[in-house]
Image (cartoon, rainbow, N blue to C red; front, side, top):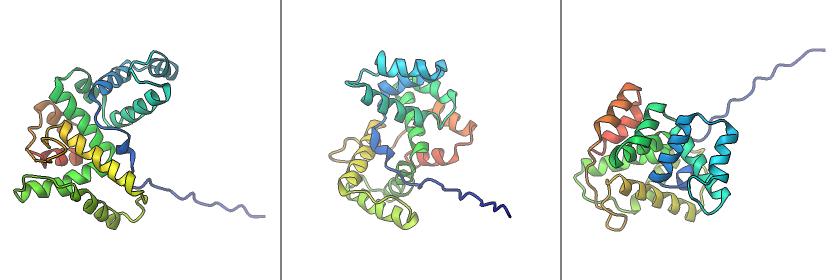
Length: 209
């Protein structure tokens, strides 16, 4: 009798996922989650802070858990040096630090900046039309055929969140006119990314300068 050794197939998650639809940058909540992460809480204490003490001030334990999980997933793509920027930085520094973590966490957000917003600036366009999002999703699907097929309502929601995030970091003046403006990346954020070899995230941010 022979024993067959079957190599397990390694499955990589799709590059483009819908997790950006879970929320925008949510700076007040992100500061609190960064603070909890820096304390190094064990699982039980983490759950108590989120679901019992309701430090995020949500209307239900399930909602608090969902938001905390998303923010934590974003922050854990980076080191605790960046968590400090989120917790203690002024509004611009903290927002840009959270933006950087969100870019690393979501290629759907990062590639939109790197491919679409960059070209709008390069072409001296002063707006970012909402139609750019649908066109971008078509490009994503051609680049990554394994990308999930989303309902139209889901695709629209993802775009709305991305545009709101760009508005939060002042790249868009608002989400109605969608007028573009350059972003001045703060020195503390740029130095963190350079020091930790975050070339992709840095390239995305520099596309906005």
